[in-house]
Image: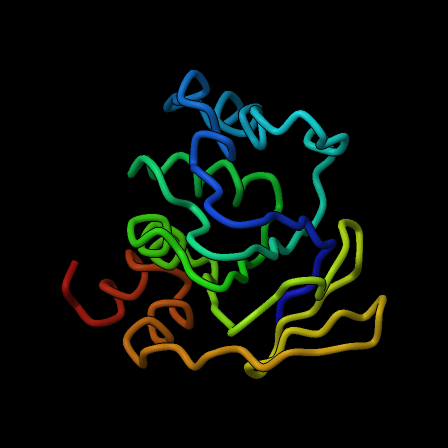
Length: 160
């Protein structure tokens, strides 16, 4: 189960909006500082708390930098729920152990700041008392998440 405050985005959100390239670094505090660095309307980017991102289609399109997902994870993002993902963003999120889950439509499902919970294939909006069913994960990706990410998954399988 994952819980957090909603961060709501629309369609075609580029990774450079989520984590601008000038925050790329091997220093985790520098990477964390870039969380939502190009989102002008965000007032809470410096506050660390559990968050769940809710978005439209093609979330995370753009570059293949893993640091984007690392920045989101360092800022407390527990899960990303969208109608669809940029392929590389999806793989980076899941490989780092952050659920990237899909559903048919999230238009109007949540407002920024709503309290959300993800559990047992359901996304619940606790603030607005509503829920939506999530699409099932491929069994391999479910196993990766259960292990805590790709590195731990490969260790458990004896591949590392």
